[in-house]
Image (spheres, rainbow, N blue to C red):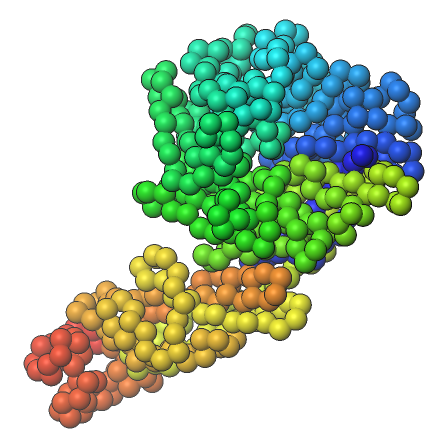
Length: 543
């Protein structure tokens, strides 16, 4: 089978949730030349650069001198550039990371164990003695760099039979340190070749995730371990899987994705709220070739291989506004092609997910390689073109907010509110209990939201406002959220004229004398002199 490496770039997950995308050639060492390239790649967007490492098993264009080679590619304004890191020395299942000085580090299978290379992209150092990382058959390994740009690596030293030993090591500047290297024994060593099993928290403590087969059989329970005081502390996350991936957010909370045997497909888990919370991400088919990253807002973005409507597909799922949004990167007819021979995802600083993956084609006579490709964003599924503006309203209202959006197909609108900077919740048509009072909402499923009837509460100078509102606009391919807009209330403008003057006092006294709800200014359920005192305090404060 002849493989190629493909790449997709989606659009930003914080408003540009999913994308219309195009593909471009990264490396054409296959296709008509019959090469083999692109299995189990790795991608990074660190430092604003887009770069990938991948395996070139054979390149007929360059002869036998460039077989079994590790390759590196990077993209700038002029397009994609390529460089061979090794030639004839192996390079399968690479893991790529970018250092703060702009250099790159790669760990890879080098025929005699796990190897390490570093360089600028066009000039590389193959570090001597790096076979000491592992000299047997390393699988399922991960690479991360610490704050000093030194590599940390986990790997399993088994042969894909579910009985490997999971180990950890790091480079101290002169040698690989193997203290407390044994993490667990009997771990799963098949499935994905590597990536996203290891993460370092803000204190530099390693966290490692893995699946433990039961009597050598999958699925098995998911374990999360961290190294504290030279001892690996174990935690079960309450789920079973065949494979699992890990990232830590800026607050050191863990985010996982795993292919769940029941109900099938892909699930996620996080301990960001204390205990482990699990969610179903995708259920249409089995999910494999898992990869995981976080967008700039700390929301998970996963890539994986699946079958959708009878097509072999590479898919991304992004957690947006509390909902998992799916985007198909590419789909091909089963039996004619295979997409997603290994995948990796990296989200850039703008929230754009970039996915690399392998691909094979069958032309009726045999399998052949398609070009190593990359996806480039061509426009978003939903674009917010006009943000809602903040409003200062009188107590009765109305306050209106309008969003402008465009996208493919029919657009669906949802308006949400946040109290005191807390979580976002959908507004319902009619009365909504917000900040201790009832606010009437109209148009919650349209481009314009109108709110009325603002209860002021007990503090006239600093009432229970502002609250924040935003619009979530969705299409079949994804969604986008508007920027938040503030709703504040000027309680002294009782007659809603836009000015605070003696007419507001007269309007309030008339309402107070009538004994209705409007006269209950402090919202304590009784119309009395306390309402007069509180109104006069608010009126004196102005707006």
